[in-house]
Length: 156
Length: 156
DNA sequence: TGTGCAGTTGCAACTGCTTACAGGAGCAAG
DNA sequence: CTTGCTCCTGTAAGCAGTTGCAACTGCACA
Image (cartoon, rainbow over all chains, first blue to last red; front, side):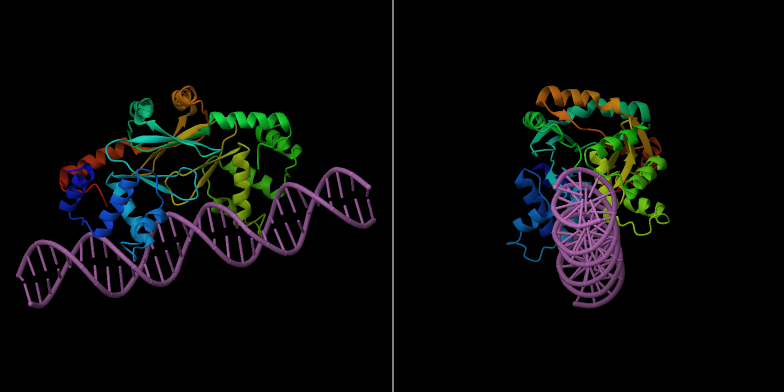
């Protein structure tokens, strides 16, 4: 039995129900293998569940998030994005200029966790982070632009 | 001349204007010394600028953010919060249970920056981060609760 | 002094997220 | 089978953030 079904069964035994909508949302976000917005999930399930509504998807995603199956991230886009985690926590690196994305290993934050635990006694919950920066290509591009336009502003 | 006025003058020389509203917003957020929402700023300036509107505050905060004077953070509350940075970047540690907050030194992320730079060639822009966890007091509390209620669910 | 231009403001409208509430569905006890 | 309870869903409404647009302001230049 797969990991997410094991967790689902555990939750069922605790009184939570495995409704068709709930399982469908989990299957979609697991099958996608990438970040999805609420609207993406609605579109994917429009055929099989025409009456599925935004609040239902929203609440189920919160539920799956609390169960540790799904992570919610703000990657700088215009809407929140959700991603299936499973057993492999990870983080993201996003270019502020072109939006290019990389996946980072979870061990990256081990020193930070250590520090928070030792210094403040906190139990860290840094499961899914997004780091921002400028990718090499955009650095080149910005440098070239700067040579042409010395008065380029730093603010919009 | 203070740091923020120096930056303001620089921006003025680049064609951006130092309107009364803009300076008032900067003064308020600088004087507060803590996080503020858009509505907080509007309330503070209600007497001196009765016609000040949400979009104006919003756009000016984006402007100040791009200028590096103000940081925008989602600390898990119900609205975005803005804070004056000045010359001392820092980060935050927030307890997911009670909301207790700590301020973390910027050097905490130096290893992460190093990794992103060396491995991906990225120029990191991690000026203002929020880490979440469970504070010692709430860990005690959760442990006590668990002893009383063995069937306590992990999901809402 | 008059004209043009770019930046800024406030109103209005829009979007996406979130919550409130009433109805429906499944499960357990009687 | 009936009753009662809890969970779940969908409709509707609310909220903060965001964008479009017309009017205004200050500066540069003729």
